[in-house]
Image 1 (cartoon, one colour):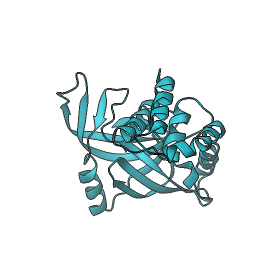
Image 2 (spheres, helix red, strand yellow; image 1 turned 90 degrees about the vertical axis):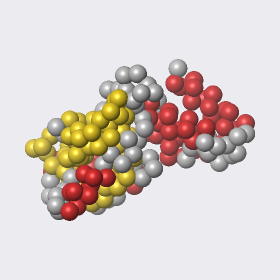
Image 3 (cartoon, rainbow, N blue to C red; image 1 turned 90 degrees about the horizontal axis):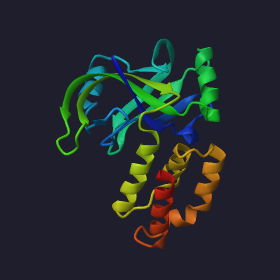
Image 4 (cartoon, rainbow, N blue to C red; image 1 turned 30 degrees about the vertical axis):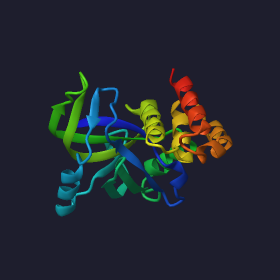
Length: 218
């Protein structure tokens, strides 16, 4: 079984006291550090089969099959990627309770998928890039490091600007975290930029945002 770190941050603000957690396990059309890109629809067949067979997609810690820490209640594709929502079983597993604390404090903040490749193809428009067209999803892990990380958030925000939109406050915070800022600093910077984020996409605010992103990217 292959493993791939999506590098997309867990939605810590949605972390409930009951252990409910959510985020993106995979992003579509983003090239990771392995030179691979997941295509929209890659998980649909696998998710349908799991539902039909009443087979769960496992929630693991660091891809360790000896460390199940919860259950995924919702897994679905949207325009961005594979969105997941589940529960850390903090009252059942000491490891889950420990993971909950680490996620809450930001020590663990990314997701990774474990899968088998069913159908792949070279990307003819980009040398050295493989498109993952169909995957058999087996598990989604909470992990320390991801393969997309900073590049994913940069691409998300640039795509927003190019499409005539401004990034959301949460997207901008995620980008700042991947750029190396602590959670508290990222939240403070994003809060101070809130006025710009709510400005006109084609105006000066968007130009300032684009220049800021490019400086961090360099």
